[in-house]
Length: 135
Ligand SMILES: [Fe+2]
Image (cartoon, rainbow, N blue to C red):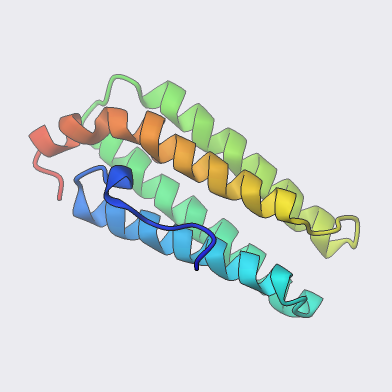
């Protein structure tokens, strides 16, 4: 059974965003599996970097939609993204410098953050984006 399972409760009803959320979840699962199977550091480093890049481009898409349509909660939402990104960058740097031991606590942190962010923060823009015709 996968570590992080997508379900309809995570849908923001905007297909382009749901697809990216699914991809992020898949990457977190991959990361979890690699830690569980004690993969070599190089593979894990690659996964963390891919995850960081993907999260960055995903957040950029959401922020672009918000800006284009003058979403009222843009600033607060962006702040959440920035906070998460600085955590991920820190994780990436520490691991690359051999200063971090990967644990399931870290995978759980990523999973819980993404889950909570989608369900609480992203869902707030759902109806707004639908009304703007974003698909
Ligand atoms: Fe978001």
